[in-house]
Length: 567
Ligand SMILES: Cc1cc2nc3c(=O)[nH]c(=O)nc-3n(C[C@H](O)[C@H](O)[C@H](O)COP(=O)(O)OP(=O)(O)OC[C@H]3O[C@@H](n4cnc5c(N)ncnc54)[C@H](O)[C@@H]3O)c2cc1C
Picture (cartoon, rainbow, N blue to C red):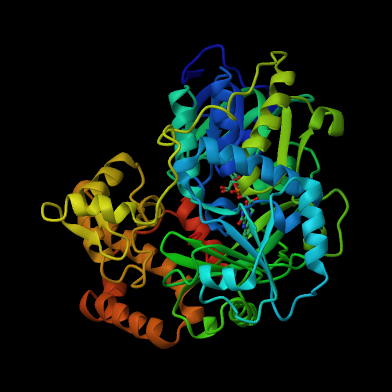
């Protein structure tokens, strides 16, 4: 892979036309064998796999890594039980990958276990179909007495009539994506966040790469022998840029996080997949979800009050009292549901994945789309996509990702909920704590700030869980802004802008839910930021209109939606 002023890299006539159409002139140039579009779990998985097989690899992502659906999911490492009756292929993929990810990504997984329970509103006959489906698809499921289930989870609805144990777990999507990206980089890949694909370039019937645009306006011409479209719910748009047709339905789902763990095990309703039927304990919170409705546009959708009420009610059925719990925030994401022919319901679309070779489909060579699937099948999706890419390159090479652990997972030790507290206790008296809720220490914050090019507090939130606890940034964000100002040598206006952008983003997820203790907290935060700091009247720099973080915020603002974290 070579960068920049390489005299052998030439833009074809079509590329120049695409460049002109996108309002770009060719700037920096990069060449590679495999170019991956999209920095969610799928794209980063593809980049790691391709780099491990020795292909020179580049990945471009329009925002920060995992700011698409991957950073907004429910947090469940599926056992496959959810799909055992309705979608057996997806169930088989889930359990196969569940076993592999436990082996290679242990540090990103908490082994919570899972329960399927028959609640008073569920069809009591479904349990037999569930057990048969699990048996047919290889999902281990064992019935336990209801009394035992209630002993394990005392807050569970005491009126459940049956309970089954399955190997569900929870997964930290951000950690998985970043460690995959780190591993890919160690194998020589270049990971380029904040590079938006503005045009896909073609030379006749051959895709030759993309023109990418950075938030500062810089343009990058990337030429590749094979381009892999891994842009999730946006895959149809990217395919269109290449002159191909892919139908990906954006299946919108919303989730809500309570301020602590109401259950310690993933709890699913033993019923056909429905809305609000899973409660996931992840990190310090429990997440109820989700809905599944068709969004017209993956960037424009809204969280409605009716959906919030529906989730509160659904939580109540699993854990009585849920509707009165302190709910921190609501957010949503869009599933990439691949479907050649539109179905009536998004829930009817298979959760299995598809690799599309556009040479066979559309007569366009050097271009693949990997779509559909789940977070928990990202490694398998990547394997299938890179198998296809290596066929295009005429160089089949074996995949090793099922065996080689990710960095930090070599010891195959699962993440433990108490590990951050244990780590914090080691530096209790000699290091300042910046975020009390999430135990973020100053040194860790400064390191992360120094490592990142963009001074975005929202990116730091995802990296460190900064500001994700009950105060939603009320007590840590003014401190973090001061440190950002110092570490990144920002002007006061830029630091103020970073703070305001963070607060606006957080507010979108908080205001639809305000009541009780969380309303009191929001008032206090408001007094801190408006009353004491007068944040809305600080001299501010203009926000970069094209910045990836801004675009994500824009998506939510446009639709009044809460865009935000997976927990
Ligand atoms: C509500 C909800 C709950 C879910 N819960 C679970 C769960 O519990 N367990 C599970 O396994 N799965 C779950 N899923 C499914 C799972 O989250 C997704 O299938 C998976 O994360 C998709 O990953 P991806 O990498 O394919 O897409 P994404 O993560 O969306 O990545 C695509 C990337 O492409 C980027 N992109 C778009 N356009 C451009 C462009 N022009 N230039 C450059 N980059 C671009 C986007 O910014 C994005 O980062 C859930 C999904 C939803 C919506």
